[in-house]
Each structure stands twice: as C-alpha cells, then as structure tokens.
Amino acid sequence: MSKLIAALVCSALWLITTASAATVKQEWQLDGRDKGAQFANNIERLGSQRGFSCRFDQIMEFSDGGNQHYSGDLAVLKPGHFRWQYRKPYDQLYVGDGRVIWHYEPDLMQAERLTDLEAINPVVMKLLDGRIPLSDIKVVERSYDNKLNIHRFKVQVTDAPQVWLGFSRHGDLVYIERQDLLGNRNMMHLSDCSYVAPAEKLFSFTPPEGVDVLDLRSAPRK
View: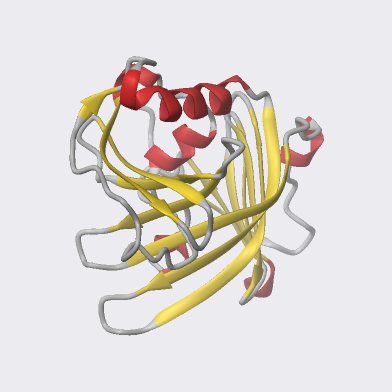
C-alpha cells in the first residue's frame, strides 16, 4: 500500500502549536451540557448538513523522519457519497456513490473498484458523513490554538484510535489529526468550504476508454 493510500483520511494537516494552549486533561461524556456543549453543538451541526465541499491540504510526517504534502478537493453528500480529488503531488481520485467506491490513477491508466475504505480510516469518513451519533463520541482532551484561532478536541469513538478535531469559531470542522500505531502523523486542514450540498452527478465515475479496471471488492459475507 502506497504512502498516499495509507495517508488518505487517516486524517489531518497543519502543525498545531499547543505550547501556549490551555488543555483540559479530563474525560467526559457528551450530553449537550456543561463542558461538552460546544463540541456537541459542532458535531450536531456537522451531522445536520446535507453535504459540503472544500479544499484540503494534508501533511504526512512519517516515523522515519520523512514527510509528504498533498492537496486537493473534497466533497461529501449524504448518505454515503464522497469524492476525494488529489491534485498534488499527482492526480488521484477516490469517489463513492453509496454503493461502489472507485480509486482512479490517471498516470497509471488504472481504476479499482473497492468495497470500502476500512483500511484507511472509517472513523473520519463517518464523522464527515454524519454517521456517528453524539452518544458514541467521547472527548478525552481539549485545547485552544491561539495562532490558528481554533478549538481542538481529542475524541475517542468506540475502540478506534483517537483523533484530534479542530473547529473554527463559527463551529466549522477545519482540522483533523491522527497518529497511527507506527508513529506516522497525518494532519489535514480544510478551507474554502461551501455548505451547499454538491450535485449528485459529481459522485459518479465511468472509467475512461483504455483504462485497466481491477475489481478488488471483497466477497459478500455469508
């Protein structure tokens, strides 16, 4: 698996400086009251949106000391529609219409049909798609970044790895960060977001003529 595929939606950009941030090292369940109210409102707002589109910038810091920068466009339409268009360092597309997920690399003239993105990071995709209820999310730490003017929350969703989510003062999700078991750090910054639901046709894909198509979908469970 390439570093780009491992990076996709593992989730997150922008090095957040926390030296001057006030951190609450406390765990609480979100119930829409007290300390969880701000985060609860942000998650409920995200879940109530029919869809959105934005630009993303992504930095992967690898445990061997290397790093890689990616950028492109993201669009989400509920339920289950998404489009990740990588522009740099090279073109690459992930698009799902709620039934089939395509991965297309034009430079290789190759397209793959996938069952899901479980090998990448299902938690972030489900958060963006509003499929995770508030009751399943637990905040374990929070901080405020004065430089970027965002509120950051480290969250735990069931037994999945913890994820940092950053929200603007308007309550928009603008930052995602995760570190995997190998010590690779994945940071993503969302910008220029539009909360008008994208057209459904944006999430359809037909392999161009001459492209090799690989069917990597797993067999249905019995």
